[in-house]
Amino acid sequence: MTGSTPRLVVLPAADWATAVAAELAERLSGRPDLRIVLPTGDTPSPLYEEVVRAEREDRLALGGVTIVQLDEWVGLPPDDPARCDRRLRTELVARLRTPPAAFVTIDVDGPDPDAAARRHDDAARGIGLALLGLGPNGHVGFNEPGSGPDDPTRLVRLAVSSRDAATARYGATRVPTAGITIGLARLLEADEAWLLVTGERKAAILRRVLVEPEGPDRPASYLRRHPRLTVFADAEAAALLPR
Ligand code: PGA
Image (tube, rainbow, N blue to C red):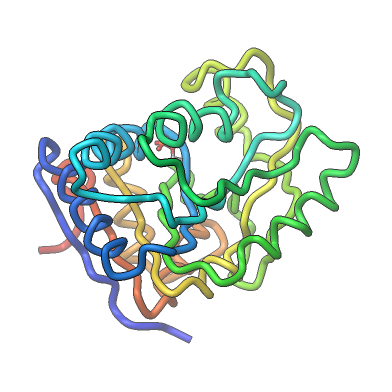
């Protein structure tokens, strides 16, 4: 299974967030009740800033949308600054004039994370649009190296680089013990997927993900099987791609 060639949109860094938000507004005007997967991290933050601005200026509406959280750390307290649900709430959901119809988070605080993952696998069906970041190790969500295209939503062991990023980059108060992520099987079933990639530090991995043969050492490469994948890269992230 090879899929079709992804659509690659390369933008100047200064225009990246506004251009992606404008395309999101267009999708939402066609499908106001979209079920949409959202990531957290430094990549989507400027996009959410722009989405909030657009919503306040009536250029975009999320009132009919169901937001489904992409992934979450296990072992961080609910108020931890690195928690993905907290970031999505503070960067986007709580700032909207009209909140989304639903915001489906991952219940990592309950007694049974495996059961929470299974419930989230159901929530991750029927997705209209999945927005995704790219990890420097080629992960997407917490589908870390070793993950495959048939993996469901599940409890996962985190790569060392992801655990380090939690504390060093996202300000986690302790080291997370695991993660729960929507699996590639569900992401490949979404009607459409957008891979969001910015900055020079992602240039080498973006090339490996898009140009080299797919493989479990860089699970994001399996997204190339998706029939409607768009890669929104800024010029720095796209610098090593063939012209
Ligand atoms: P970032 O993280 O957006 O903070 O770079 C992406 C990821 O590691 O999945």
